[in-house]
Length: 553
Ligand code: 16G
Ligand code: MG
Image 1 (cartoon, protein in one colour):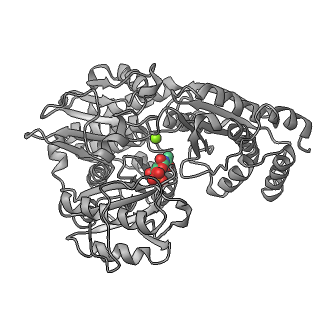
Image 2 (cartoon, rainbow, N blue to C red; image 1 turned 90 degrees about the horizontal axis):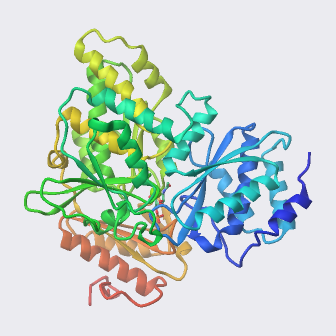
């Protein structure tokens, strides 16, 4: 079988490539929604080849730009078991997206077919879903044309959260073993598992959830219906009809980066709150303490809560040979890492930023807890661990209860990808089980102060991060300058990496006090802006440093 060049040519003509260079980055393609038409077409083609490579298994395509503004959009592919697209295929995605002519496109396709030894006679199945962005509908149509151009079958699942699409993809490829392959099936699976853990235990006060005016808001409302009296949840920022409001002064990213509450909340001491992001694969919790100060419970806090709970259960259930491990990135707060290593005595592995890196590292453990500080994450259970939880017989009541809770957790926690709704229920189930308030949870350890900044530079690709993003190998000499500044602060730590989703470099700084963390960040930003290609207006807060590293302004 060969590629039908005439058909590809005919459909490609409807989606001409613009004069833009595209890259399949940390979370797929992501840019302004109005320059993505041809990219979507090319992703449709690639999805067909990926499905054929997997002998016709279903591949997922999610149209979203997550926490970015409403005018942005993007797309990422999902593997048959619900993971992110294999990294070796990201280069193919980039090549196809940048092909400007039918000849270039067909050459790119033929190259993939040859290198991957794809049998074109295999069937191809793709499912697609989108978040609430206005550009989504047209982009779905473009991707559909791409799938059709190679004769694949595509099913449009409409509006879903990103993790729901990952869930459905896995269900379809496991003949329902993972669950019913529908949005309703997803809610039922999560709600049933949650009930198995909390039924009969005292309830907590209501949880106020900031839906970022995105798809997570209606999804959580639907999930809550399945939980009726078992979970009291109020969804705030649920206006998905006004596109411009998406992620505007709301959502997990706004709260985490700004370390402040989103719009729409009259925050009172004792209130329990959480924020989702625009496609609901990320969550952070927050509250006001008795003095009314805003307090954040980020991905690091979720990870430590989950790891300590599961460790306790495994011990109580007396399941032998279960190794629990935690995966973090450089953005993990230094206090969190110390707490995990010293108090929980759980091994910690560091990976580069981006869910796919953490996910794969977590698969190395029987119970792999992975979270980015920004709230992306989940807990993975190995097939051996799941089997052990199901085949161990408890002899005492406590042991039986622990085993049943472990089994329920394996159903409650999304095994395909970080999932804000599943994580929300996991955290609530743990807090109910431990009868813990947010402030008690928060008191496990105190975060070091931190600051996250960004600098716009002429070419961010001149910045090369190494050692799980903790250091820069390029530009030459910059890392030494950062090290020199870090050493001046108590608990000082700072690192720089090029963003995979925005045209900036990110600067992280951590220190014993907020003033120090802010200052360290301002110094590092100033050094980058002044000596490593800063563009645009120089932000007033950036510090100026002389050649010996002394701050002069
Ligand atoms: C994407 C990644 C996230 C990462 C973030 C970093 C996924 C699903 N999402 O949102 O894991 O933390 O990018 O963004 O992989 P940055 O490269 O712009 O800092
Ligand atoms: Mg997201």
